[in-house]
Image 1 (cartoon, rainbow, N blue to C red):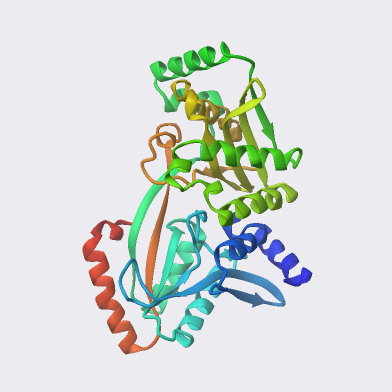
Image 2 (image 1 turned 135 degrees about the horizontal axis):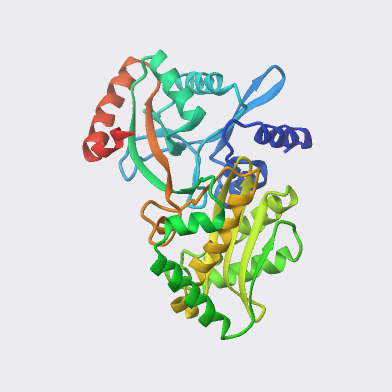
Length: 356
């Protein structure tokens, strides 16, 4: 990619109406290199007044959740936790209009447009609803979930007191005390690139040492995800968008957390803990320290990037962010009529999708 094009991309990310680190250049380009070897995804870009005003990766799919239904969709993967396009503030309506027009004229065999892992609140979703209503274009939310997020005017101590019972807070203090009896216990917080390579290696090893490694789903289990994680850590740190948090025992990490800082929001990207110390809840102790983000004036909210009903984070973070998958009609009358049948079947299997 030409240097000027990447600079324009980075500038767009800074003025986007909703931040999405997973579609920023430092994350998306390594993801494409690692996870799209066939170069099937393409970057759709909206230019307005000589500036890049919108960007989203799009791919043609031959099947739809196991069914032979070709469609267009935003390119997301297992390590991409938000599918929202990067759109300059004020260009939301223009972006959706241009995207839908492009899909209408370039549908090919695709029967509809599918947008995965989309926020179901905020200016992007509001603009999309406006455009779909104005165009009388059939659409539906075929899946939704509410995942934990952190958004409160309270400070860390007050938030923890409101979120957890006195009994649970007492238990956390006891676990911290018992863990500290095993050696020197300290919390290390970094927002620079000092010793980043070593930290990255330690994280990959720590995650792989647990159940994810046994299941083959750890980042280190596959060369592609190892490369993505390593490049993403370096890219985020180079732009001042990475915070690393570690709970160390005698200098060795037993719980680690990598977060992307994209003001006014942040994203808890990856976390891992040493399962040998599970009785002391090191992951929860680390999340207690992570509540310090509430004191940051540049961060108003943090997305957990966790699945709904997560057994740990849902009990600490009390706010929720609605995220879902949308299917949208494209093309001419015949294609749209067929889509209506597909949508009806999808909603029939998941009527809760319409509650958003």
